[in-house]
Length: 388
Image (cartoon, rainbow, N blue to C red):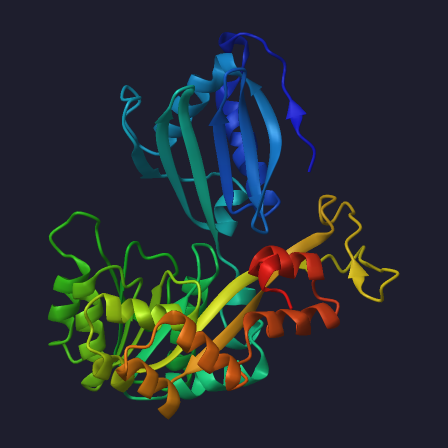
């Protein structure tokens, strides 16, 4: 995308309300997940995150920077007179954009050049509601369906922020609702990002009295069969979650970890006993999102692989949308023995490699060969140093 520069006229001459509305409407129209308003010494940079990549789209005069952020704060119900503290809120969009977006969040933060604002956009994407449509390899999809049908155990999803973990969990819950009607399903989330019909969804307010451990401990007395926790962040939540997985509940959650082995070791570092981890954790799924080549303009390169070109449909990027690359580790006897012996990360990684574990790289190469993405994209997502 190319960056547009607006005239450096005075704030009074600028239709700030119109500018903000136009930028947000355009962001929704092109499917941006985030809109960044970044002040510099000379202007206010506006950037869209498209398919995971942040690109500049506008350069507004520095003179209107405060007014633009103030307008966002009004829309988000924030304190316009406090410019020295971080603030968070929610926006309501009007017009066509309101039908596409399920939630709009605003975060404002003070910097040396003024306030930096980020608007996060959440969409209602019916194509991503079913587990079968997320792009899992057939073998992993089949294993996930088997785990979803179990009556107890813990399923962990790992990956960085923005890697689609919440979308996967929501799709798994919908699969359970559809295939196992009558099950009691409860979620604890901070905040509730995706609505799932057939599940009781409970929002956890940051710094409130109902924390994850408090809510989870109480819910276990309400006869739930399936529990989903938005994220395991601390040792107390981890301990109760593991206990739930051992006592007749199917529990699903996420953790921030770079690999399945790293997630298992993190549980041990939180003080969970090795025998509890080996007895409760059914599987760990590690996932990332990778950009898809635009079907309208991709072309075959000299090396026999498809390359991005760029057209109006993909806004000149050569890519349109994203898909999953994943790896899944299920605990077997060898892995359980290593965990009970408190093996380190390198030992676990070597064990998995020797057993022929299919990594995200393997999954990504499948997509490269199918012309879905490129080797360059795979290296960016997984790290060039891990490509072999």
